[in-house]
Length: 254
View 1 (cartoon, rainbow, N blue to C red):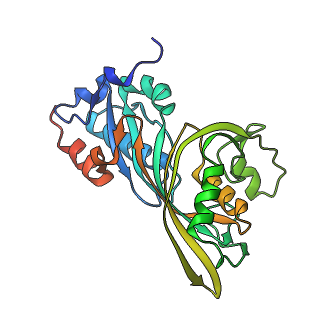
View 2 (cartoon, one colour):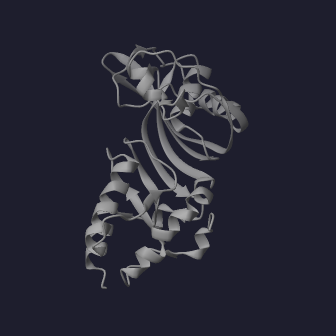
């Protein structure tokens, strides 16, 4: 049997262990500093022990970077056949972008590599620059990304100092709303922190949006905060912390 629809499976049903085998969807609020694979591995280990099996299928339907939190859709058992369809769903994010400071990875995982004073940037300028990125655009993936380059992930090549030839991908940003725009001083440099609400298609890198917004304004930029608030039909309101889900699994009756 090929792919299946998410509607074929239960969501957050801890009524019996068989539900995990038959396949269901778990909605987690990913913890900060955990990779998506960390979450999958922890859930797989817990389910294998709870079900008393050596192998058990668990997968996620759209990765989040370690420094991001929010909606992480997990599929168990037969529901892993729905992952491909779920991955294609549109996503929504709340992002904080720091203008005037650039990092190699485009988020806060690495130190700032370049500072440019951004004290002249106001909200009108940011809104205008964001409008340039709204709609169907070609986006260049970040150098530090999971894109495969000759069989290797781009970030692995980048960390070794190798040459990387990335190709732009066509994406759709249906909403890029600017909220607060606040100047602050860090290490003697004036930066501007921008909050934004973003709705976008599969394959969009919010780190690349931060980079491109900063470049459009001539000061550079990187992502300092990211929270996924929706993935397809699933919103953050329906998600539970990993610790709660693990406890629910341990308490699930036979």
